[in-house]
Length: 238
Image (tube, rainbow, N blue to C red; front, side, top):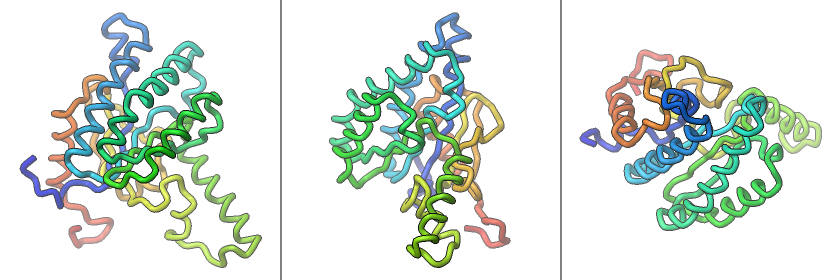
């Protein structure tokens, strides 16, 4: 990319949407769309690492997704397990730390164990953090943080709460807020994703369905971001 690295985002968040529509257009089962989407995940993660963007958060499975057909949910979770197994060597080689965020306790026990294992094994990697949002809800994350804060206030662990303090109770504690949110498939909504963290995030929406969102489309979104002027509510450009 010709843009200076200083203009690249430090944290990219992506709502990976359109797997089902991709499969339907080809008269395939929805699970085939999720399988094709794994290749896009691999491409985006690789590109993110090559560009030295330190944080990437992918919205893989929401709380609301549990209402989908059982067969589709089981297929999606099985694909996640396969992805973790296949990509762990790459994460170690590329110095990528893996972190699941969301209500992981909702997931099958064997998948929970695998997630914990990959998180632990990659825990000392420092070049990039890959967050995968699973059984995630932005509203639930805020409620969870509020409950934890209330408990610490009652015990005297903290005496005051400001934005900085609140951030420490989120799943993304210690990370910068996303600079860029990308949503594929053309939908114009946040879908309950990172509601606190996206307060001043730049948004990029593409009609491209997730299984077709590869390196070129990703780099285009990053190039568009590099040309934007961020003011964070003020007249001064960031």
